[in-house]
Structures are given as structure tokens and as C-alpha cells.
Amino acid sequence: MADDVIQAVVAHPGLVLGLPAGRTPVPFYRELVRAHREHRLNLARVTTFNLDEFIGVPASDPRSYHAFMDRQLFGHVNCTPRKINFLDGMADDTDRECRRYERAIARAGGIDIMILGLGTNGHIGFNEPGGFLIAATHRTRLTPATRRANAALFDFRMADVPREALSIGIATILGARRIVLLATGAAKARCVERTLTGPVTPALPASFLQLHQNTEVWLDRAAARRLLRRAPLSRRAGLP
Picture 1: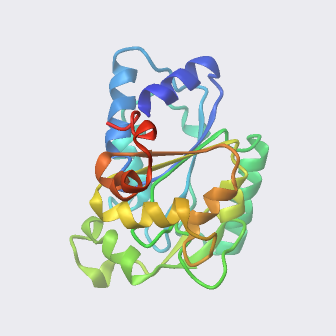
Picture 2: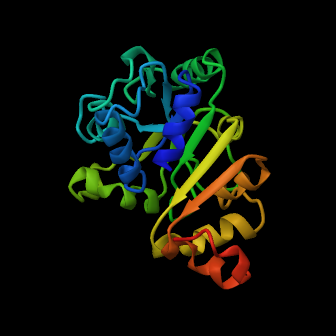
């Protein structure tokens, strides 16, 4: 995936990227850093928008997604600071902050490549399962499963894990010209299967990716295992 993005940036240096936090994309970011150090990747003209941020956690806090991204990517490459975009979890008016972010995405011309991780409960960004989904960037309440998944950032003290966050909405995600979903590990296998083969439902937000005409799903064998049982042998050749 890193090689693919590197080629895209070489072809279009002003690319607009949507980026996730979390464990899954860490090897991807590591490869981008390596490519930059080897002078194969110049990110000076790239614009980035991170998907989400915790409410009540300042950017300077090492537990914030802002700090996470600095550690994993931005502190090691030549992205232009003014082209790096984050939601402000400390904003006094979160509705206004969400509108600001939507305007910034629109001014950038929209997102060219939206890279997503997949929560075990089917969330993408912090678009959590429920009876409905919110289209635009919004304030959201985190499910217990999502809070547990982020507990490592807070030294596994669940009481410290924020209960709310800001997230790019499902329609904004689907507005990207290309979407790439990354999922690894056996714990994601059932969710991957439901995402790709089940009904489109707000109870599984990732299922809405079925509606996008240019979505790719990049999996390791463990995450793909339930699909492998379904797929004819001729369709397995591309899997590692």
C-alpha cells in the first residue's frame, strides 16, 4: 500500500490524503517514512486530513491522535505544516469546528485517497454502529468496544479513555475519489466478511463502502480467511 501511495504522489504531488490513526496503519506509515529517508517520497505539496480526534484531549497530549500522527509520520517526513489538517478536540464549539473542517476539505478540492482502518465493530473513522449515521463531520459518542480498542493509548485505564470524539462523517468519506480500507488480523475477519458481503446498514458503518465505485480492500491472510472460504481458487492468487 505504501508503494501504491508513493507512486500516486509521484504522479500527482499535490494529492489530498485522508489518514487514519490506530494500530493497523502503523507499518504503512513506517514505509512512507523509509521512502522519504531514501529520497523516494516528497510530501511537501501533499495535503492531509486526519479522520478523527478525541474530545477533551489537546494536541500536545501524547495520547491524542495528533501526537500519534506526529510520532508515526509527520515528525519524520517533509509535509508542509499548513497542509496538515486535524480536528481540534479542545474546540469550545464542536459544531463550528466540524463545519470548519468540512470547509477545509472542500477548499482543498476534496480527498483524493481516503485511507481507512476498520474497527472490530465495523466503525470507520469514529462513525460508530447505531440506528443511523451522520453524513458530515460531527461529534460522536464512542462505544465501549471502541474505547477498549484505544485503551493502550491511556495506559489501559478505561476511566481515562474519552467517551466522545470528532469524526469525519460517512458522506464525507464516500465523497473521496478513491477509498482504501486496510484490515489485518484474525480478529477482523468476521467484520471484513460482513462489510463486503452483508447488507448495507448503519449497524455496520463500513458496509456503506459497498456504495462507493472506487473502493479497495487491502487485507492480510488472517483478515481475509472467511472470504477465502467463499472465493473460488482463481480469485485467491493475489493474496499473500
